[in-house]
Image (cartoon, rainbow, N blue to C red; front, side, top):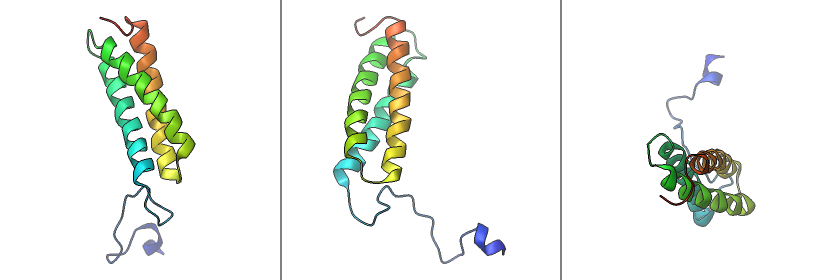
Amino acid sequence: MPHILQPTRSERIRLTLNTDGRSHPVENGLAVATLVCGLVSFAATFFPGGHVISSWFGALGFGVGLYSQYVSATTPQRSLNIIGLVAAFVGVALGIARGGFLP
């Protein structure tokens, strides 16, 4: 029974966004871009004067994330989109609260 909980030595753990067996390069790129924009936006809120970066990257990440969620094809893509969208929303909200889009 322990072999059910862990992969055997012949199996490799693969992290992929293409769980349906087809390639989705545009959708994968959009999902990763959403995640990166969201994380940059969220991280920039911790620096003084980072509200400009946070606001712009958050707005960009939120817009790209909404479109990416619309065209996504697999569940892992949707998961990255949601994580990126939430981070972008929090980043843009904190960026606007701390000074907005302009320095």
